[in-house]
Image (cartoon, rainbow, N blue to C red; front, top):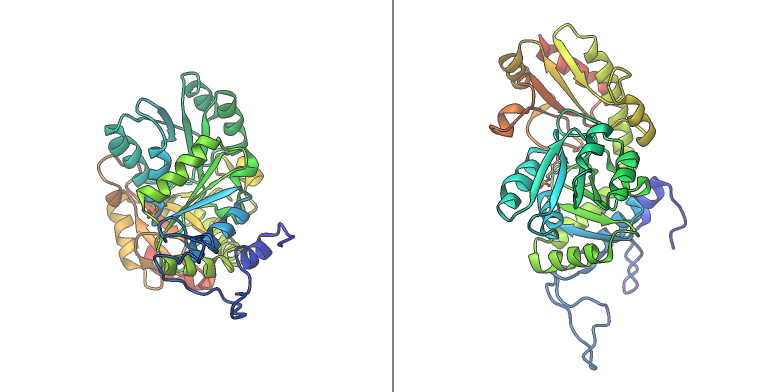
Length: 378
Ligand SMILES: Cc1ncc(COP(=O)(O)O)c(C=O)c1O
């Protein structure tokens, strides 16, 4: 029985116990897609078929439930599969409020794909409580937050939005991919659901694809039941090996995220004073418009930052192409630093400034990262 709420301890121990049959301390990897019944036709270990549940997924779901302070977790084969599961539990005609700055795949999924099924997606500035109040004056089934947002690191006040949304009868779902449960626990701030792309910080090594939903103890029972059904019958579940890798990576999550946050904070401050930089987006800077809210709901400001290069699209592209230690690639949250020129990958709907580079700060020494950026900026 785990008797600690410290993320370092929870990350190492939740969802793990020595295997009773062998004493193995590291969890076994169970590939079997099906599980034997006993002489009475019963399932002694509770698993029937691997799409419905399996030992490695059960372990990682238990760990993620504990890390987010939730009551149930549902693991999926990608972050997008997890997001789609939330939208799939809603009904045609349901109105969903989402941030005007968020992962472009979520925007497309809600607006275009689920739009065809009758979901009404409306995009507002969720960092502006007056805009949230106005949007909630019309019936809304769900409000979606992503904080810090991808790629402009807007911060939404989870506690304040949750209070407004609950009063209006709306479900609150938070994409916590960029903050991670180490820095922010949305369920304790009033959200009903947390979503993660576990591909990012939770996996942490750019070697797995996954997603998860964690429901709080007071999430509506019918919502939880539908998510469970969707996970099983929709079938976009992670393979046992991806669950095993994810559980292994969770043990180092608090250390990785704190180190990445410390380096990102130093680099953000340095870039803010650089002559080739127009603007830095990082919630740890006192100049960030939502710094005060960020300081309240985050225990550090995260390993992600964005910056605009003077000279716009061409200048930003040139910097991304000149880095040597940092890799020019999409994705984030891994041990290695990645940089990406965002607008070209976001498609025609993108509102991202053309000169913006998104930077996922890895675990390299901060001075090596600074030196690489210095030479790339020229
Ligand atoms: C904030 C955020 N949410 C969701 C996703 C989608 O996750 P996945 O690529 O695992 O489907 C991403 C991917 O970049 C993301 O950054």
